[in-house]
Image (cartoon, rainbow, N blue to C red; front, side, top):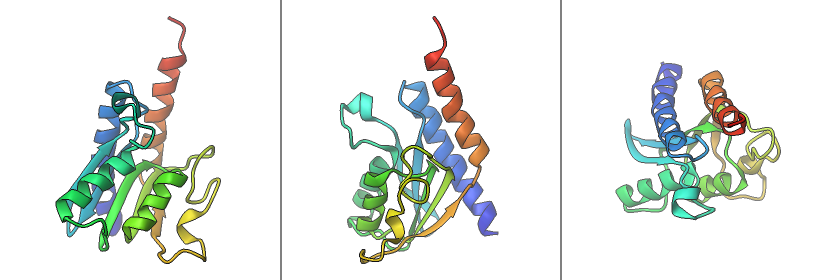
Length: 154
């Protein structure tokens, strides 16, 4: 049952990622789900906003915080199409998100398991439960096709 819900919410994150890609951004999308409903959506907006912190996860956390009227998002789950970077993983800890579900691993910048393990550092005062690999193939294909198109000769 949980796996089906995870796939349903990851589909929403994939829609956000597709929107980012259509706008020329790296196609990464995220949603924050609390009590069975989406309270935050985000897609990469670093180029559009000229903001290096406007990663999909940060955008979704900002919206969720506004909706919840609280920067603490206990009881919530973040769904994101790729393994979060150090900044985004740190934000999940600071927001006290209970669970992270992500699609594809990020061998170059992933801070959950691939390059660093931010979410379970013993010195931190919060730990995030992690489920990885949900719709991973689709998440990775979206990224790879975006970069293939960007690098194709014109």
